[in-house]
Image (cartoon, rainbow, N blue to C red):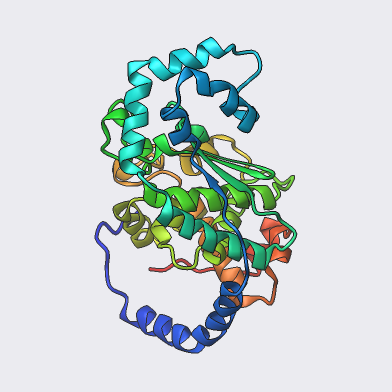
Length: 327
């Protein structure tokens, strides 16, 4: 298999993309103008700072204000100990340094919420609660009905000292620039249904739908941010789209129900597992990227609304997508 290791210019493709932008930007601008007029109110409560600056006597009031953050089985003494724990105090201090305010993130969330209201007007905008989660990176964003909980200690920067024991594929996306992308992903998982078909293609398209939603909800984010990739990781998967696709076809992966394919190509991992010498050069989750390109191609070639897309079966999307990987 031939793998492109360096990014190569595609003059013809770039020219087509420019023409598409010129003729398509008018429609896009109109939509964005409409979205800009939508009124949303972003309510952010800095619980992380309130707790960090609290005294033992403040705990009863905090419990009354944020009852969902204080499990009833834990006595006040537990929270008092946490306030005095040196490691917790250092964690509070580090979060305060990286997030002395939340202004920029609030602006980005406001833009995201406006886009959500435009495409999904039935959804309520949640109240945003910032907190520390003892670096629970697997639950850094929790969207629960009217509440959006953000564990800011998971976004201190990929090289932060608190992340030294983590594998690079985990710590590389623990940066504040990925917060809004993670929030958009949490919303997308609420509205994109998992269908009964458990083929690898279906799983790819499921993640492709989530990423396509990010296209619409985060139009000004980079594709690397949408994938929660570093730029180098994104450049690699973009440059190698065609050989990745060829591998999937040659190995007859698309309609396979082998559960290990999800682990190899869809779940977070240090690299994707093709069984080749170049595996270590690849990022994980490359199957999500291909699912995204299939969904993008489908939406470019079919008159389908965003809500309609979400319930379409993967096989139908693939067959009508006219998808061809970029070479």
